[in-house]
Image 1 (tube, rainbow, N blue to C red):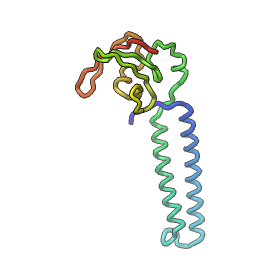
Image 2 (image 1 turned 180 degrees about the vertical axis):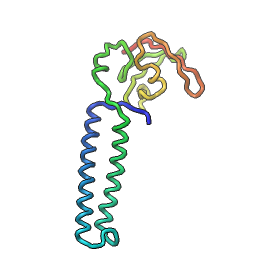
Image 3 (image 1 turned 30 degrees about the vertical axis):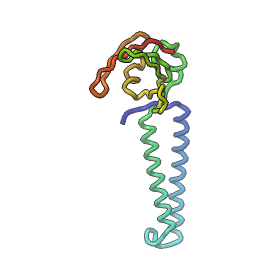
Image 4 (image 1 turned 60 degrees about the vertical axis):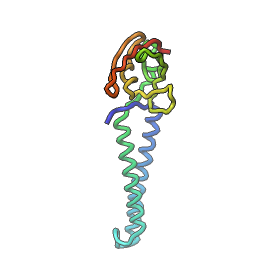
Length: 155
């Protein structure tokens, strides 16, 4: 799975959610223990046990998704962006480009967005221009088409 960037605040929120899920998981075990103490049948005709088991499976699934997200994310160092001096293209840069001889302006964003002037850092265009400087040139291919890009200005 491809790595992606998140800001530190978002990472901290996910760590809090991880802790909440761990507490929910422990609560599920307590519910199962309580359900077992009420009946000698731990797995047969015991709705309280079944409910705790189902909740535990859901919590486990959410926990696995969250851990997958955390393991495949990298914290974006805001200091790189804030101290950039507009000399290199980074996430949150607004760049004026010459794309196949047509001028376009985009802001590179850290996630996919439907706003037409923002592009995700994961797009082929953004991947090819990140860390480039003004007036640098690059080429990349999209759907068997060559795309030529020159950076005119970093705003």
